[in-house]
Image (cartoon, rainbow over all chains, first blue to last red; front, side):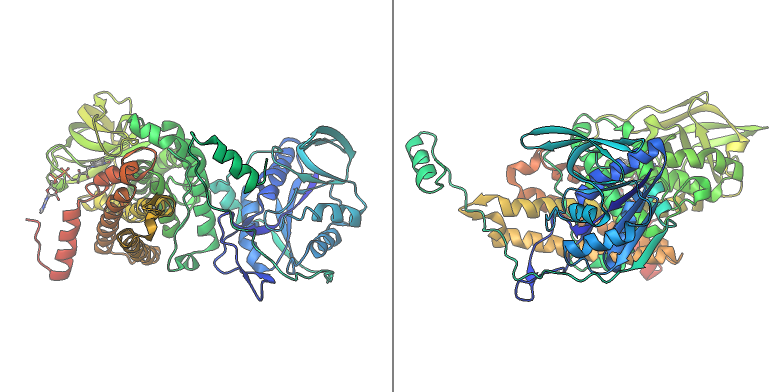
Length: 246
Length: 392
Ligand SMILES: Cc1cc2nc3c(=O)[nH]c(=O)nc-3n(C[C@H](O)[C@H](O)[C@H](O)COP(=O)(O)OP(=O)(O)OC[C@H]3O[C@@H](n4cnc5c(N)ncnc54)[C@H](O)[C@@H]3O)c2cc1C
């Protein structure tokens, strides 16, 4: 099976979030970049498991400039066969999805597997758009995935229950928690990554359609109030009048 | 132990001096440590148990002989990678790092440097994966800082030698499959050889009751007329420079490693100081606590620059033993001081196994003693700058 795993490069989860240019740009100073955990832990690892068992290749692809390459190398160290970088800034989901689709359209991938969302912008948009551009079916939020004989079977877990879906390949599937377990690269993988191909392809020049007017941080969490266990009336009053939750 | 929330501290942006591969190796080692070791290390240390099941994983992250070339099963990395790996291991526990230091610098390094091709092929690949564990016997009950006076000796007996004597304070000894042993021949010349578990007359009793490096097994090597085949002797190396070259490599790793322990103590104290409220505000807001934290990160930053530069020199084969002594001595010292100050910052919590600081502090008492004591390294620097020998 020939699998394509689009990976997104996102700030490390411990990063301090700040903005520049009148709150229209994310401040990248001092940020450590990682592979988006949903792409890495679930989509990539499951793709590797499938090809380790049944044979095939896993190509990782990222839309980004050269600063994305160390992060892409990690995906290679984890075991991807090869990597592609589409050389343009990933300014918005539409650009990313269309660039990815333009690359993938004549390459004969059986399965395109990516994380359900990025932990940076949480858009959950790229998979669906990509499927549309390619004319493939799109199934989101798969927490379990098996694929063989041109068919994929997957569990979609949502807050309200589980749905088991069967889909003919090729398809685009987005991975949620549970699909696989995080892997840590080993030294053999890191060394092998040195010589695996990372091909840079020029962008096809897709123009964005949106622009950010303003970013804002969520409201700071209000401070903790401790209520004496003897004073339940006060707790009820606070929940009612201040928290407005009862 | 509470969840391992460690975050790296890089006040002078020293990461910019590292390659992408260095950082990938570091992230990998850190992720492995957080997943496999942090959750169990306190328990193993409390019970004074050696977490032997970690050997394979240590091999997989490249911690055994990082600079050993690929043809012998090593990853063939540079010296900075070696340092980074030791730092990540000791960030969790000095005992874990000791296991890897001994295997890398005191067992694989001498086999790689002094053994025959057949010996290298026989042992190095299996040491690199952690299938075999090695130890290094230099110190004796009556000869520590002065190893040249050792009494362990061997006599020629045709196709083998007969080894007698005892080594003490030997890391990994109770579990080791092989021991690199330094002993005197009939002319009193120091030579190295590999003694294998199972050879008749060779035993490795464990040293119990340590308050330090409790998750690393320490023991004796006792040789009672052990027949060692001559093919196990290193053919050419003679004299103290054999073991000293190994110590050089290990000390270099310790300079990086001790810094890992310092970083962990600082990280723990810094986080605690922001979360612990007394007199209505985080204790990090008090000047006395800030003085401690500010001095810690200053010393840590200096130590980071020291080992980075030493790593560059070592990659260029220009690092002198004296420069390595300075880094080992300095970095262990600042780690110990950081641990002591950090422990106080946690108040009563600082003495519990809920936090790693007390364990680091006790571990570092071994680190400041082994591989050349704090005093001995000072004498090395003293002799280097004055030209006068103050050892004897
Ligand atoms: C946990 C642990 C693990 C170890 N692992 C190993 C191992 O794997 N392999 C191995 O071979 N050894 C190992 N050692 C031994 C270690 O290297 C020795 O303990 C160390 O070299 C000091 O020797 P000593 O303990 O005999 O102390 P001594 O040499 O007796 O020193 C006692 C004190 O005297 C001071 N001193 C000695 N000479 C002088 C001098 N000339 N001038 C001023 N002061 C001096 C020392 O600094 C020290 O403070 C280990 C030790 C420990 C604690």
